[in-house]
Image: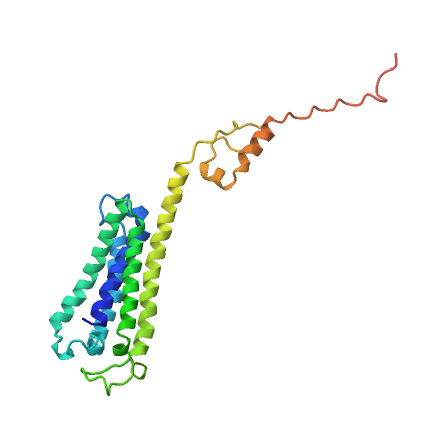
Length: 246
């Protein structure tokens, strides 16, 4: 229908697919999709950021939000509530489909779908740019004030950074957690490295962990060389000037 009714569903779908992609290592090992903070975190982001922003825009500038394709007076409260309730449902649907794709081994497809929805939203902004450039109370756009002469840019200047910041924080948090899981899997898959037995000349513990060997791969070989090198013989005491005369 309009800018908000089209762009915000695309945004929620992209958010769901992107969260599924960044949490791909975690969700592939969870028996249930409802476990973990991934879906609750996504729904909190949509419910606390996306839904309030959409509600404010629908209430303040209904004609602009609908791209003047529908008379703002025809938009009743029940239509607005149904649209706002559909946003977290779309985000959860994108997340669930992304999880199924990740578990099926197609881990790159959720990221591609998220990017596709974002590109589609940008294309719509360019297509309907002339309608978004004015903010009219009704359907008459000829005498409507320009976009930058209204309070709407100030609202968006505050809301868009909050929206992007919350989204990026969510993705970075889940990506860092997934990276830790991948590192732990890599360490468990490393082959056992025989170490020299602990002794007086060994400078390396006999039960050192694989992670320490990964950080300092030369420590094992240096310790082995040090333990294998023969110790220098002790010098005999000098007999000059101390032997008794017969």
